[in-house]
Length: 353
Image 1 (tube, rainbow, N blue to C red):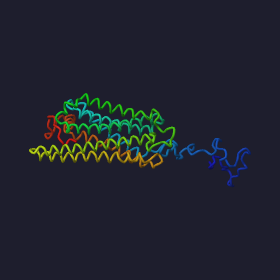
Image 2 (image 1 turned 45 degrees about the vertical axis):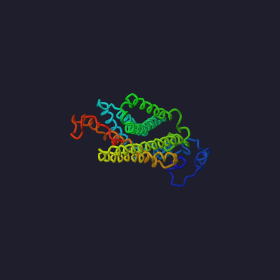
Image 3 (image 1 turned 180 degrees about the vertical axis):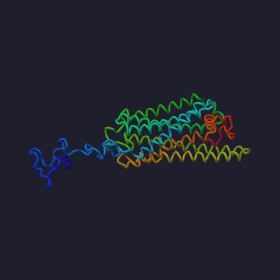
Image 4 (image 1 turned 135 degrees about the vertical axis):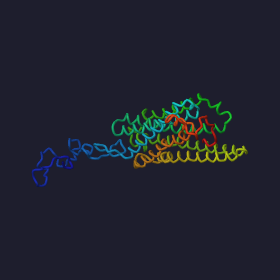
């Protein structure tokens, strides 16, 4: 076909003459955009690449799979497997029912939901089409990642209170109160997750889209500012934890050497926690504030993948390092406990930050 969609005369080697066609056809078909087969858009031509008004990446008649989407799906699978293991250990170990483990379980469930959301996003992108499934995947990811961040904040507050009110901590922090805190966290996150489906999206106005369609730019900025406030509060709490731990080390002269080692270990641990949290989430938060849908999508993919890695690291930091959870893993896997892990419940020290 010619560029205008009119068949060429293949029986003659001479130059194509528009006058040889029927008189009603104009030799310049671009002036008839509504005629079938004339001035056809690239989307009407099989196999031709075009850019959709709704999507941020190029499409073809047989859509190519982006390596970034594959990486996010693989990351989501790893997240789901890790956190499913944590939830199983907490569920099947009766001794792990303290408030701290309830918060760890809530964090694991949030990260598990985030991993499943990344897998569903891949499925909905390449196997299922429609605005409804896009809004569902977006809502799941917003709710899951918001719950993950808030649960990390709740764990930080819990660890601060365990040192600040060491004598009354176990009487004040009841299981019922912890369940109430977890319930409030999930209620807030569910509200955030359903907002895109209630109309807070950019499907009708692409100019308002953020770096993550269909979230609007204003909503993305609000979520980013929310993260920055949580991060600032975490830093303040961990600074207070350091002060309390060092004060304890100075007050107890008999155990000064032991507590100095324990305190140093605790400072190193909280440094790892804060640095990991900042490196994973700060790039995406700052990019969401300064960028919009017109920016190259590779930057969105790279920052989202980095943020998702935080859910990969969370089980290692908050669950697998805990000796009580380690004992549960050993008992579940081989029915035994190594000699270096005591069967007795372990008292919390200043290194548990």
